[in-house]
Amino acid sequence: MTAAWDMPSPFIHQLSARASDIDAYGHVNNSVYLRWLDETAWAHSSALGVTPEHCITTRRGLVVWRSQLHYLAPTFAKDALEIGTWLVFGDARLRVDRRFQILRPADGRTLLRGLIHYVCVDLDSGRPKRMPAEFVDHYRPLPEVVAALTEEHHQRFAPGVELRYQA
Image (cartoon, rainbow, N blue to C red; front, side):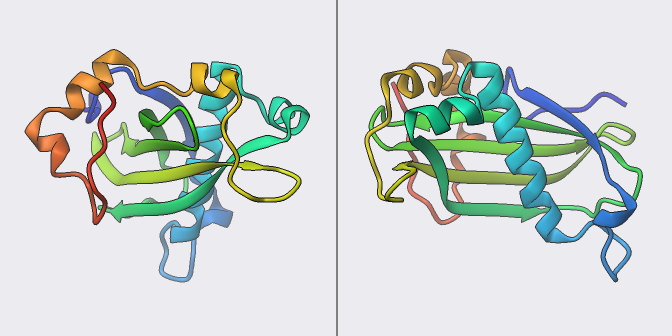
């Protein structure tokens, strides 16, 4: 079955649920989804040229400020998954926002939608610090994503957070 992404041009990270991801209720534990989103964000950042090693060298990194996850359906052991992510906001100073969607290609079902807000910090002090130029260059939403965000059905996906668009 063909998966339906919420927005154009996702970065896609593929994985499968492991037996160790399953909790007492027989499905993937909610904490595992956060790990998967983090792995996907790092894979995308690395593909953009911002690797963990680069962050350590520059002593800057993006840390989670707020996570909003909508669990829509359970994931089970051995489910093959695709996790899509999009950069949806960047203020070129401190903030970057990412949207996520987890799909199960076997049935085309969306299992989770998420919005994670990041802030740039100094890795030595842990305090917010302006992004280095290469972060600003790499953490820009794609034009087609910015255009999609203006569509009404995407404006409704702002769980408790003010909408932000970059022109």
